[in-house]
Length: 157
Image 1 (cartoon, rainbow, N blue to C red):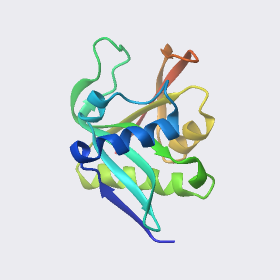
Image 2 (cartoon, rainbow, N blue to C red):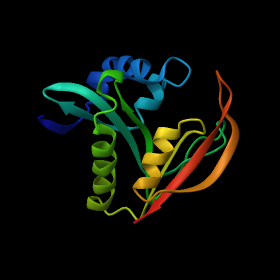
Image 3 (cartoon, rainbow, N blue to C red):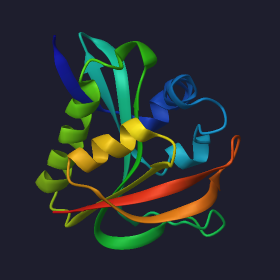
Image 4 (cartoon, rainbow, N blue to C red):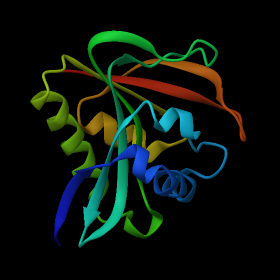
């Protein structure tokens, strides 16, 4: 298996990013175009095909309040999205992506990594915990359709 990560040219690949997002997360959790423009995104390429994608915001803290959005925070890498297309799940690629994300944060000098996920996403919660993330708070009603809490997690580097 040939594996690589390639930075997304968000301006040129916005439509492809949004299509990918819909395939992975569905319409309720897909990011709007304006949000993607704020992110640094990376494709996970497996055997020449886009299998996964992750998105970061540098020096940013996850904001629980949807109205005010995320907050600036020096030395923090916010992982705003981690996703694999359904046909690539169950092959250990989530572990590869999470290890790559942590290595990216270390390589770029971040002191802390923050992410969040649906409270019911047991696979992602367990994956994050396996890589040393700890739960720091839960915000009820963060997600809609269906309504669900978000679990915010951090990794101190």
